Amino acid sequence: MKKLTIRFIIGISVFLLAGCATVEDVRRASDLIRTDNELARILEDDRPIDQIAAETDLINLATHAKGEADALKGTQGKIPDAIAYYRIASTAYWRSGSPGVVNLMFEVSNSGTDLCSKLGDRAPDRDCLFLRLVIPFAGLESNANGSGLSGLLDNVNFNDENASSGEIDTMGKIQVSLIQAKSLVQKILDVGEDDRLLSHPGMREYFCDNAKQALDFYDPTAAVFVAKVKEFHENFPNNSLSLGVTLEEARELRKLEKDVPSFCQ
Image 1 (cartoon, rainbow, N blue to C red):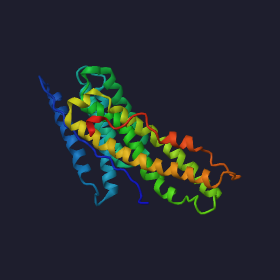
Image 2 (image 1 turned 30 degrees about the horizontal axis):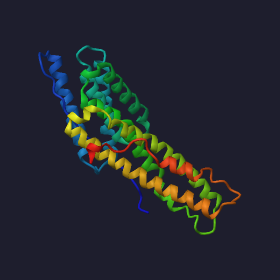
Image 3 (image 1 turned 60 degrees about the vertical axis):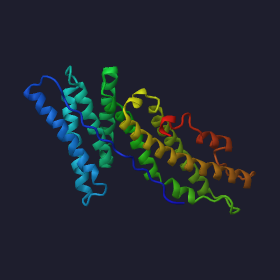
Image 4 (image 1 turned 135 degrees about the vertical axis):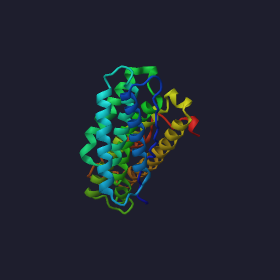
């Protein structure tokens, strides 16, 4: 089985400030555009020659964006700008790939999402939609690329008249990873019920592409897991070692409460 990996597409939106502006307003507007453009520039290089430099650049960019967001979040009329900076920071922390900034990614994502809730209908749609997706996207990407589910499944064969303790232990690890992945996929699909997607074609296309990719990873992997569970119970009905999961439980694990929205078809 080919190794399954996920790499989510990163959508970048630049938001301009309008209306009467002070010198500081103009500076921040220019900085927001410049910071967003710098994020786009770094991410456009899918395979930078110097991975360490790219990671450092992204973390530095995220740190700057977080600082600007933190400074603006309590100022009336500047919350949309703070949200945009939090979106930039969360994306940059995520794409840096550094385990050391995971907590910061959660912090800025949650801070931005909280501000979106505070603004309600006045919140910037695209930034707020993206912030809802960063954590589940990052989590699912890490699960897919780090757990090695396809490799683990390749190591399990219950049709060879043997069910070793190692294989059973591997099935337990796969089950844990699938439980985590299912929760993340469902959070992604939940965003498909947000009516704001209908009025933003670009964001809708971005969501649909990545929702399909998430489902295309999860469902086939869960299907193979179900098949392995079935093999075990059919071939070793009286095995002294318990697999720890019934066929019914495995099939239930594969099921998702939602599907990719019809507007994505």
